[in-house]
Length: 50
Length: 475
Image 1 (spheres, each protein chain N blue to C red):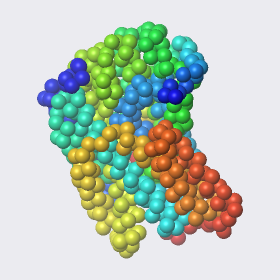
Image 2 (cartoon, each protein chain N blue to C red; image 1 turned 90 degrees about the vertical axis):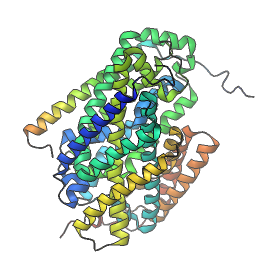
Image 3 (cartoon, rainbow over the protein chains, first blue to last red; image 1 turned 30 degrees about the horizontal axis):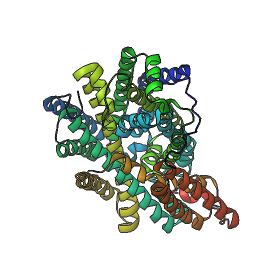
């Protein structure tokens, strides 16, 4: 009664998928920071910051 | 660093706090020189470009909860937990087309309350304001509490002092610079947050290769890697709808839409969602690696700083400290500015003093920022659980999703159905929160609200709404 889902199937995330998720997230984080700086330079060149 | 043993000395923590605090205040005052009139103070002159627009949307959405609670999600719900938290970025994606629509329908608008009042009338407006203010104050309070706890955990600074210092800094630069100060500082804070998360994540990967993390977690906590974990799957959808509700209704986002150039607004929100999406995953991964690294986590809220200090010592803790401080400041300043707009525009101008001049409103907005800061400080002195404060407001904001979307696009949305949708959605969502579990509350609230709005409008469509009524530009 107190053990719900005891027969619930267990399917593991495959390791390559976890790798893609984590490495992809870290790469996107770095690209994000670079993108912001690039956009600032572009807005500044076009006098469109504000 | 062990739990209960601060990794930074109080002197270092205080120095970081004072250094960054003074920098934000100086920058806020510098940028705030532009905020000469009401429009400059409330919506930064409505000419914000893509770089600042993207950064402010992203930084506001990166709260201390993103950095400190996303790891909790990962610790409790594994890979799905990380992804569930990341789905909050979908709110920014969904808001992108709405931002364009909002800018075009309301070129002189100031708040989300303005929209609901003109679109649905006073009853819906009152209910919407209540939901919005409860949520905003709950968010503000949770940020203040998180800030105090952060300083106490990382540097041994007493909770009341740390919380007071963070609130003081944000109130001062928001007071002097208004939306210009908020958006300008948000840019720098965004870059620091992204760089800091990347540094800690890469260090963890360097110390503990991913295959090793996966193998250890699979052996010791297999449920965290289970694709079919029911509560985690529910939390994924729940978090997504919570995010939709938060972004769609809250004036934090509407005020940014009003502040950006209309061609910039949709691009900025879309891009900010892309930039925000990986942050909870990266932070969650840091938490998942705690077990394989041999770190005993007894307080999940501090797992990020624990892992960072374990790998990088004092420098790592300082990085986490700075990232979380930036996350806190970028959200607190935005909430102070946007919530004071709601008080100033929706309550003071529309209810109390309809003939107020722009200079009067400008002064009042500043006073409200200070008052809101003091009220938040008083509430923060009584500590609440972070998760409870955050999620209890979830069903309330989720009930506003459909009223906002249908109000922007359907000319015949039934006003009474909108009021009923917010009431019934909030009520059933709160019931679900306490009876079924927090991870169902927003989902149920959004579903009930949708049914009521759609059925009410189908059965009794209102006369077609004249969209021109939302445009308050002088003729």
